[in-house]
Amino acid sequence: MTKDEMKNRISMALKDPVLQQGFEIICKENAELKESNKSYEEIIDNGSTALMKEKLKNYKLLAKAKEIIKKLYLHVFQGMGFMELNDYNFLKAEVEQFLKEVEE
Image (cartoon, rainbow, N blue to C red; front, top):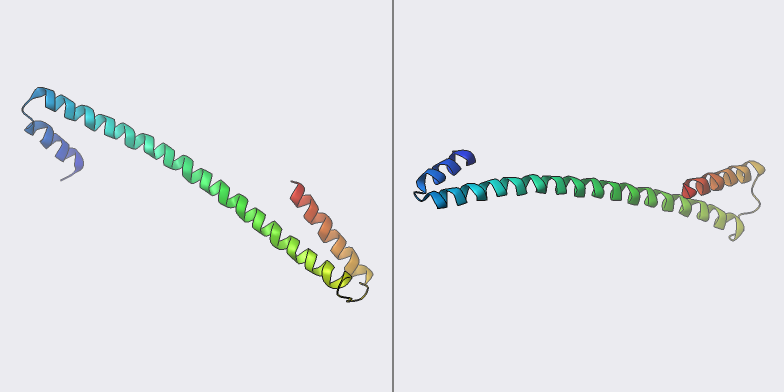
């Protein structure tokens, strides 16, 4: 038996017209609330998705920053020696690209 069939049977079983009308009002309000709830669920889902995307973006930026800092640390503070010009230019370009991404 479907929900609508059950509602109809309950409504018919109520002999008092006032109770019948009250039951129908309650059913109508319940349907409206369910529809409202769907809208709020969509808003929450969309907000959660946007928040998760932002967190993922921040995590990726943090991981990239960690890589760049580690490279700089190894070459500057751990005495890995002077970098070749190509390595230096590559690292410089990587840092510049990272800074552009962060500023967006």
